[in-house]
Amino acid sequence: MIYHAKSGHPGGSLSAVETLVTLYFDVMNHRPEQPDWKDRDRFILSKGHAAPVLYAVLAECGYTPKDQLNTLREMGSIYQGHPDMRFIPALEASTGSLGLGLSLALGMGLAAKLDNSPSRTYVMVGDGEIQEGQIWEAAMFGAYHHVDNVCCIVDYNKIQLDGWVKDIMGLEPLADKWRAFGWHVIQPDGHSIAELQAAFAEAAATKIKPTVIIAETVKGKGVSFMENNPKFHGVAPSADEYKKAMEELQ
View 1: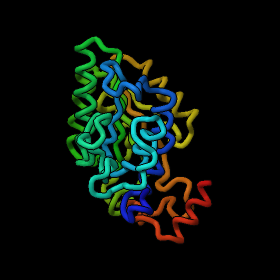
View 2: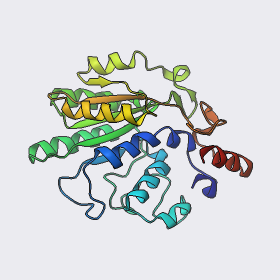
View 3: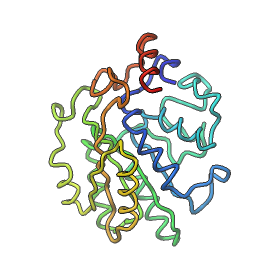
View 4: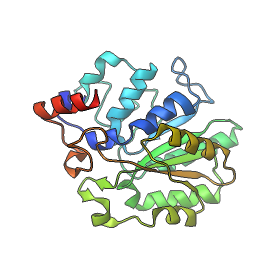
């Protein structure tokens, strides 16, 4: 998708693959044939620039057409550069304005509690994104109101737009910060489906407080020259790079 568009964000899309696959194919209760089912579990991709991985999973589930995936970022395509509910109604939110997704998720979680709905809400945030203050205001809200049907996933690939997170505004001790804000913390390998399955099960069993899964991931996972390379935060591969990447992934 990104190669055909000559634009997009490969690094942070590849780091999120296993998390989204696990959620949509094993964890979440959802119905592609009935996307507006009231009691569905919800997913918000707060780091909306990683839209390609979400589009791939939605298409594989049957929400959207596979044969249009390579229209990413084209005028009129449903596959816009960031998730947009005007084009894909099955999305829970239009995202990409970073810092907002956790607040949206907690609002949905609290609404589900008021409606006595079994619905759970999952939200993926980027590690660069959580440098923003609204994330921590939302974290306080979630713990204070015991919104235990919300699970936040931090895609902790340690690289953001301008370089390494630690060189821009370091997050450590990240797990202790979330604990101090009243959240249950789980730290799996974000590329191990088995560890992610166990983490999501633990999150669902945790009551009174919300859960954050700090998923240890690799930016550009699976493509040797993209892995841990800040260049590929938002740069499409060249023709030669695309060929090499596809050989490695296959």
